[in-house]
Length: 111
Image (cartoon, rainbow, N blue to C red; front, side, top):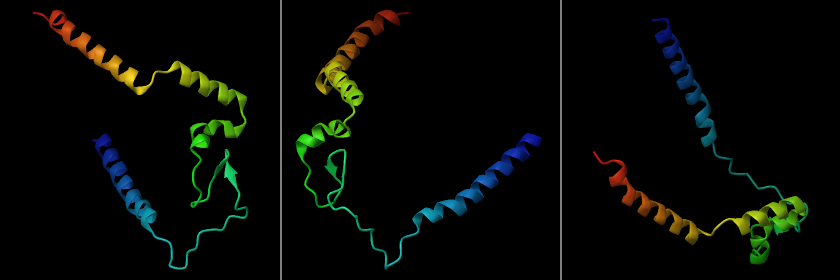
């Protein structure tokens, strides 16, 4: 009986917490809100511009990790890209594994 009261107390507490906290996430900003201005219009993160109207450079997006100038990151990502198969190879392996399972399942689960 003691555990049931504890469970009810925790449930009520959780419910009250949700009623108080969750509606605060839905509050909109006022009508006079203006987004902050950037001090430097040429500001970039990892070589990519953060401005909304900037057109993305596809080569920089393809090699985004080079913008950090971190040789360890470049090495790890290069190893991961060369050592991992693309999506078509992975899909073919999954299809082969399913075919193997479908052919072996009747033998394994035979009565």
